[in-house]
Each structure stands twice: as structure tokens, then as C-alpha cells.
Amino acid sequence: MKKKVLSVIVPCFNEEESLPLFYKEINNVQKIFDSFNIEFEYIFVDDGSSDNTLNIIKEFKENNKNIHYLSFSKNFGKEAAMYAGLKKANGDFVTLMDADLQDPPKLLIEMYQEIVENNYDIVIARRKNRKGEPVVRSFLTEIFYKLIAKISKVRMVSGERDYRLMTRSVVDAILSLPEYNRYSKGLFSYIGFKTKWLEYDNIKRVAGKSKWSLGNLLLYAFDAMIGFSTVPLMISTFLGILFCFISFIMILFIIFKTLIFGDPVSGWPSLVCIIFFVAGIQLFCLGICSAYISKIYLETKNRPLYLIKESDDDK
Ligand code: UDP
Ligand code: MG
Image: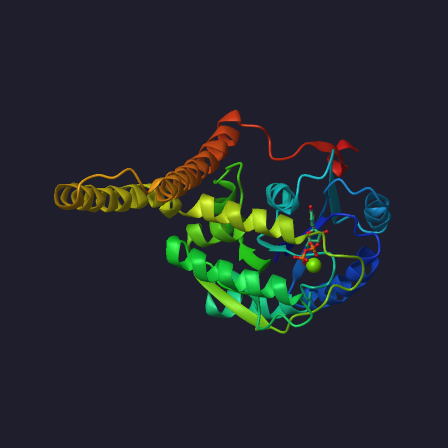
């Protein structure tokens, strides 16, 4: 019987320290998959690393014909790297995995069993806790998931990772969504399919540093909200109605007050405050609209998500 193929996609950005450790670990898992009659295909996506990452990948490739790689012309971000990997993958099953061993490769076995035995289309790793993560980051992440659950129809689960094993049909569905502003967790949720979340304890990265600063994460969260909810656009309508109502009451109040007490010139400080307040709200609403317009702008330019400097296809 022809062996089935499992593609392992690994986005790498300056991972020279983690990669050798990762490769050793995934090789151990590969041996177990051999007994299931499954062959591994590796796709390393070098996301514009400035260290030795690409050379390390090439060294791996010398001893393993199942290794493929793509190298971007600059850092395009993990989302672009994952998309490039999915496009290049040929496997019947495909997994996305970080290079820093925060996504335990051993979990693949359980994921695979869920797909084969319980007919799931996609199995997603979910952290039970955030041990070892900075408190502020965990706190803000929790707020983000609560907020997005309220304003978006797309379901996103707190603690879920990009680490997942999926069938070919899921990969094809994701590839049919070539949008520029990508938030994969949202896209995966959007496409549906029978999904299982596998829980595991959080693991610290094995070497090197996280590439995400708090600022980056906030922007990423903002992208997710703009990308998967139009509720913020309605805020301006809601506030507009509210302010019309308030001003109507105030007009009535002023008319009656003038009729009863006359009209001495006073109250300019309160007037200035109101002007500032309303102007602030207007700018805030304008800001929300601009956020959507800027996304539309980027989307209509139709720029590629990434540019490839070299890949093993060149050989
Ligand atoms: N990564 C990437 N491009 C980037 C940032 C990260 O390909 O611009 C890769 C990185 O090499 C790693 C994975 O994405 O394999 C997760 O990154 P990281 O560990 O920094 O994120 P965290 O686990 O802290 O969320
Ligand atoms: Mg990590």
C-alpha cells in the first residue's frame, strides 16, 4: 500500500539555537509514524532570518530527501510563513509547528489518532494554562478572547495554538481564502470542519527569545478584531444616536430654562468641555472607520503575502 504523507510545516525566524533540538525531537516522532505507514515531509519556511537558520536547514536537507525549504526575501511574519508552507505542502495530513518546541511534537501521535479513529478533520493543540508567560501578556490575552467572543460570530478558543494537525480538505479550504490581512486562528474557525481541541500543559521555548513584543501582540489582536467583526463600525452609529438623543433633551432643557429664568451669558466652560468631548468621540469613530479603510486599501493592492528569495525547487 502506498505510504501516506504527513507534511510538517515549520515557520522559522532566527531559530538557529532551537532548530537542531527541534529536529532531533521530531525525528523521534517520525520513527513512531513509520509504524503507522506514514512518511514525513518537512517544509521549513525561513522567514527572513538574519542568523544561521537557513544554513542549518540546508544541512538537514543533505541527509534527508524529504526536507524542503522556502526562504523569504525579508521577514514577512509568521502568518505569511504558515500560508507559504501550506501552499507548498503535498501531504495527506498537514501540521503547523513552531521551531522552539513549545508545540510538543509528541502530541502529533494523539492528534493523528483522533483524526483516524474519531474522524476529526482538524485537531488543535490548546494550552491548559499559561505557566511561565508574563502576567500582563496572559491578562491581555484573556481580555482579547472575551471581547472577540462578544463581537465576532467566529469562535476563537482561549489558549489555542497555531499548532494543529489537519486533513487535506482543511488545507484546501484554508488555501481558498487568499486574503492579505491574515489571522489564521480566525480563518480556521471560519471554515468550520469537525474540530477537536487537545489540551496540554504550557511549555517554555527551548532556546532563543519569543519574537512577539507586547506592541506586536496588541496590533495582532487589533487585526483579528477588525478582520472578524464589523461591530466596531456600528459604534459610531450607536454613539451618534445616543448623542442626538442627549442633545434633544438638552435643547428642551435650555428652552424651558430660558423661558423661566431668562438668558444670562454664562456656562462657557461647560460648553468647551462638551465640544471637546463630542469632537473626541467623532475622531474615535473616524479612527475606527479608517482602520477598516486601511485594511481594504491593503487588500485591494493585491500585493503578494511574501516574496521568495530561494527554495529547494530552484535546485
Ligand atoms: N516566527 C516566524 N516569523 C516571525 C515570528 C515568528 O516565522 O516573524 C516563527 C518562530 O520562528 C517560531 C514561531 O513562529 O517558530 C513562533 O514564534 P515565537 O516562539 O516567537 O512566538 P510565541 O511562541 O512566543 O507566541
Ligand atoms: Mg514560541
